[in-house]
Length: 303
Length: 300
Image (cartoon, rainbow over the protein chains, first blue to last red):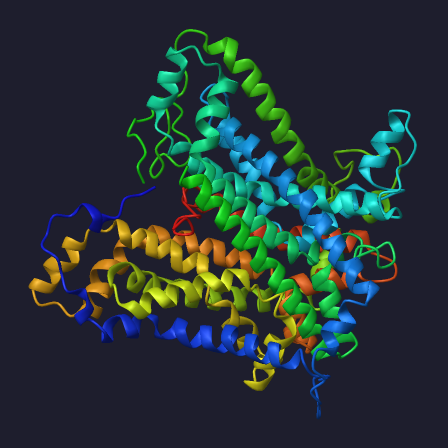
């Protein structure tokens, strides 16, 4: 952890509270933006989730009907379980790949690490739409490179697009590939902050590279690991463009995730109230995930 | 940052000016350990690089060769016709200009506003600032994708529907930006501020004259991140815009994908064109991005 400059300074205690105008001016813009684009939508979203508002005209309060209907709505359940499945697959895969990439890049024995680091990072620069297009091109059933190679090796064409589960798997791979660079950067920063003397001491004691990784690197980068898991969980829960470009949430509607569900109900079918209720369920899930991870993180840090 | 300060003896690659690296291996057992690590690294790098390479090389093939068997990695007679077709079709050049305008304005606003907020959070300790810090933290839990419907209504009520402002303003406040600046200003000694105060400088002029110039590397890093976020935005512009003359590049690409019969030649061309600005910016400024401690501040 970085030590705050104020913790170590030996100057007499200051009364910094006498400044009110300056900090207020400095944060004014963000306070206004926060009020307009976070507080206001959150409040009206909550209000509308108890109504049958369609985006125009009058509306009535219908109490908990939206929520009640949601939990009886199989389409909503499918979207929710599919989203959770996607997150469960994507988060660990991305974590493992990013950690592997980061360790290889900072490994002092690996040659050409700085070039490789750039290669790992470039996919993150592509937009989710382009990532979807790119993997659609790779995994096309009758024209893609992957099936071409599989057939060349004597296999038979794999139904990457027409099988719902394989289709989801392609998106998981595509998204993991695209997000590795970003997670890797966070890991690299963390790994570099582990004092080299720890490793030197461990290797004097005869610990091999794997032992050093498990006993020194992993515990030292735990806070970053939690950040990566948290950010990736949020990213997974709100994924939409990769699916749209790769298989349009298909085949059929089998890979319509939460955001696509909210988008379709709210904007294609005009059920703003209903979509707001779905939004709130998603928000509560995100909050729960974040809180659980924060608690675990505290536990790990206070060990 | 509390890294150990060991200068790098060899391999003066990118990032030497800002990041501190461990020394490259020298001495006994170097080769024996270099081979597996290097092999593994490059197998993985190939897996990451190949899809992009295949995509770019495919975009250079003439439309008639795209599906001709056997597939070849390198185009036989490379052509830019796909790019040209993409650029000329369906307003794509207009989309490109729109996206650039949105990105540049949003990025400037994001960097400016985040810098101010980060400084206030780092160098003043009023109660309400701590509360606001938590508010910003809460925004990370509420991505606009989740608040789709209500956020749309708010923007519509503000009269910003179908305008660039409707895409730009909601995107200016970012927790990542505020925390990056906060983390940076925490490392700037308080004595610097105190000394300027004793010399009679006003608060805001301390910020503008001393602190802003100091934070240039952070500004650049956030600018690159912000540009990437906005350039690649899809769902928000899709909702906010209904005038085809205002569409952004991502909407344009998705409309090609959404067609009944995908015109792959145009699609590949358009996609590769859309990648160029970001990859160019990244390659020029990569050492700033690569050394950025992006998670700084989120760890408190």
